[in-house]
Image (cartoon, rainbow, N blue to C red; front, side):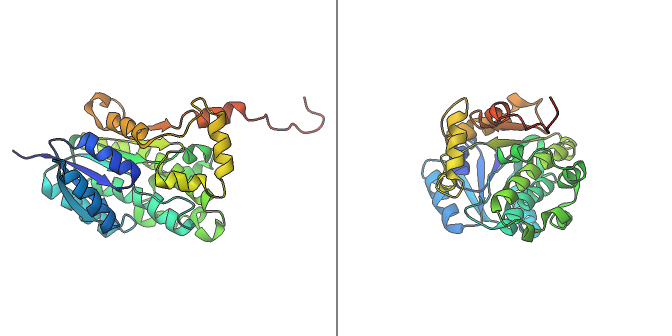
Length: 282
């Protein structure tokens, strides 16, 4: 009997945690830039009974992502796709962040729209940083959502040289992820499939811990302290949310973003002091 195919793009903390939750009885295709990391995860999953195939991919390269989509389709019915690959501001400069975090997601949404099966679903890991970047000019938001992937990095506002702080590039890229998923819901829907994004807060993955130890670590700790949950998230928090969005039980949810941040964004929006009023105004 043919098995449904589950594709996990990025085998770091979130991808590793999600894979066993959605792969039982299915063929799981692991994709990552690092063959060493990918093979290690494949060995762990295979050793516990999962049917695992691997495929090295460069998400920033369209041909590489097209090859991944074709490889997935060759294995069977592509039922679920989870895109967890990404770089953080402590790992890379602005140009690499735009290439992997923004363009990589655009490639996934375009290429898997060709092969996702009816009734299938995709999920993209964005970030709460994308919510912090809300309020961009409408023209820029529309471009981030709809410009074809091949032209995406030619948007003038994405000139990497203008981003001395990789954190600003990261926020813009993640805002683009949220907008792009909204736009992708229509072409995915024409195949009878759904796609959503998740915006994690500060999560206890190696990437998240590196951020806490970086230049903005103290600010991030303050954000956690003022949040409703008062804690760092876990990879399981994100995996459970992704499992829900990928499952048929969420069949009426598409083109939306699920903020899983422990209440950080809510606190930032409601507890921030009001903007100063000009003299003479009340």
